Length: 316
Image 1 (cartoon, rainbow, N blue to C red):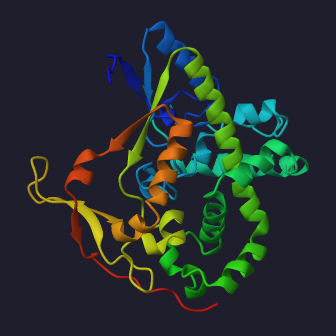
Image 2 (image 1 turned 90 degrees about the vertical axis):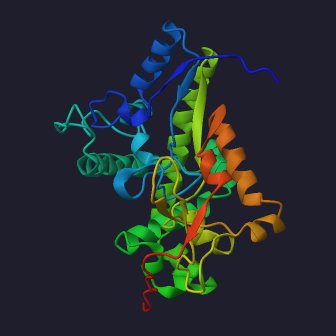
């Protein structure tokens, strides 16, 4: 196979200019593609686009499959008639140098919920229904995020034991109790991927390929670990039994302890690594080239007991 030498730029969409305090998938993203075209660049590396977890890092995400709602363009929602110009004003004075995540999240969350309210009469639209039906990961992710809000943002091993361990009756009860919040997260993911795919098509039509990231490990506090505990090295209470890191090397004399749960590779082998195949398939539908982050983690990974076990909260 011959690989043609090409050049491009690494820029996470959050770093694009925006009056809303954080870069998004609006016109500035399309203008950046135009800039790449004028500069005769062929690649745009975007890093992970998943919903950022603790520390606002896209490498510590609540899902390996979902998109980050903070990247949703407010202007596009106005164009769709889901928001009015009056909804977005007065516009807060955000920092021009950095993302103030707490302020941005509060501002955009309010607008996204208003847009969701306006979207209620479009829930039966075929495009929306097809997206919800086709995203195999969406149900667990939306329930996970709804539960996370219900339990005050706590990690899932601090939720009531019945739902943390996904007992059937608890799952059904919470699906009914949090039905509207679950639908809200369906809407966010539909909107994110609709906007992202429009941007990707625009880039591809101009000869620009998107490079996306696939971090080797997922966050413990993620819908992936909660929904698939049998695929990760967790104990009977759902706590991490072993966590990931790398041994001492050129970059660190003491090694690095990342804290992500280790995979149960033997369990994954039983279904021909279905979770991994779905992960690659989903990512290749949204980007053109995958960067595995990082190869050292695949080639030589360390295991360590977690620094501190946290018992499940029982009650409710």
